[in-house]
Picture (tube, rainbow, N blue to C red):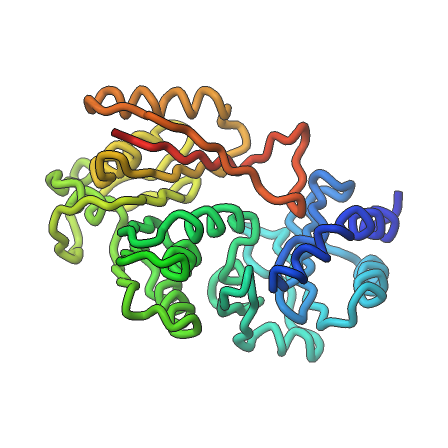
Length: 335
């Protein structure tokens, strides 16, 4: 099938979803998930009044881009932005060539379930400041944070933390190493008038998490430790753990394939008895059941117990083969 055909089919299948999004004051979502819907490496999202087309394997020809644009414009006449990320490290490779590209470099405000988020389709980073597949996580946190304390680790632009604050959280601590991401998070807090609830900690996750857990801060062998913010030990009613696939610093290595427990163990220690920890793993090759079993074993090794489990599945704008989505999110209640 042609790109036009598979995209048209995807839009038709999402008709009920589009109406639901409109009713719930949401104007940011995926409209074409190419890996599953017939064009591997091509994703198309709506961000407010713009269509964001992104390629991760192969650059679109001018003809292909025109075909896609015609289908999208017929659906809704928004700005069309094309980011070619098929090169190394998934960074945007194509230069801005029209007014839409200029638009992409300006800050916009988008809405998800009535919550406001800042968005920029092109900037010094790689992604548009809000991961759309994590909508289910933000919804869960918003619905389960009233009167609670929340720890948001690897917070990026603090979407989870803002959702928690909007859900009535008493206190939200957002931790991320990027000053750029936290600055966007602060703007999100200002947009939603929740700055009094949100705290923003710029720190490597390892020293922040180990201090909060009451553990000594260490580092990798023969690595000199840089300075880091000092935090006192404390526990939270709800902890959200959403690390990247792989990252390395003087303090440790984030590795979701081989060592999720390196982060999960101290995160459990920051979770109050009877509290909840939301764990995320976005690596497709990690088996869901094996990963879950390893989490339960880790909890039990610390003399605690998982008393309830809830899986959070991505919304229908992110279809997956056999409903086995690469992004796995599980909520564990821990005594």
